[in-house]
Image (cartoon, rainbow, N blue to C red):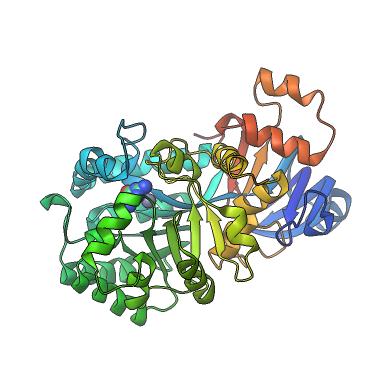
Length: 435
Ligand code: GUN
Ligand code: ZN
């Protein structure tokens, strides 16, 4: 048994905060303790209480005055796009065809996939992201490299081999049958191994024929517990092209509905330009809209109506993500800074308590994994991030006038990045210092 006792200021959420002063939505301990035993949080609370319950030989780590949070969760990114970040394009479809598809072709080589997987997990740890939901490439080799590296780091990851059988270069296409067979093989080899979760991953309706959508439907029926991830309603030209490929569907969302791909485990990347009918369909099926702020701004895709979707009579479940490499930062702090600005442009307010809820418990709820990640509750996986609001000279100067927890969080979101992450614990082990 390995036991570690962390001391610091701790913050964990119980539900979505209804306002910046909705203190019942979270627990904050000024002098908190977390006892980590065999990769799990064995006890959490005031330091004195947790210390009294800890085994005498527990290794003690004093992180004061820093803030301890559940590890950050990134609900949507593309691991083969690490070298696509910052590619100069006018819009989504130009960016995909000019840079992204050619780059993803390289992942047929297992040595390349393994090299990028190593960098990918380094960046996750560096940025305090302990769980990510990833697209691999169409090649099974890319999924194998991803999950092997996830196991090596003992991280809880959700990922899938992309299914795509049209409207892309030949080197990036499978077929309806091959996509089905290889997804099944990835599930058999990796799902439930270590902390791995496999997601059924048809890229989007543009790159899947109706036959492949049916194959995805068959996989979803065979493996109802698995996540499904795809893209929806990101860009106006994309929407028009998609609807022209499926003229029988009422709208973009209806395409996925017709193939049985909506539900509480379905994660729709972007979902920016939804009609009221589509919003209702998302809500009624419990499907999740995943907001990717830096990507939406970088590609000029649009302003995601986060607050509007959340407060409807029929609310839409929401996750937040970086969308590397359409997104421009690995940092969930940077992402929520841009999310805040998008709501500002829409005349809405996103308060820092909500932002930090979304990056932790909110995303865990959207993934239906809140029993394992996203909180500091006893029994959860010991995935923990340590943050400093004095990470840079400019932040330290501003920190001199910070007097409340909400101000501290807002400072870290507004000015922070990987430098704000002092340490990242994965299953109880500190991994950032060792990078
Ligand atoms: N739609 C289909 N594929 C992609 C992708 O790789 N990135 C983004 N942003 N949108 C997509
Ligand atoms: Zn994406």
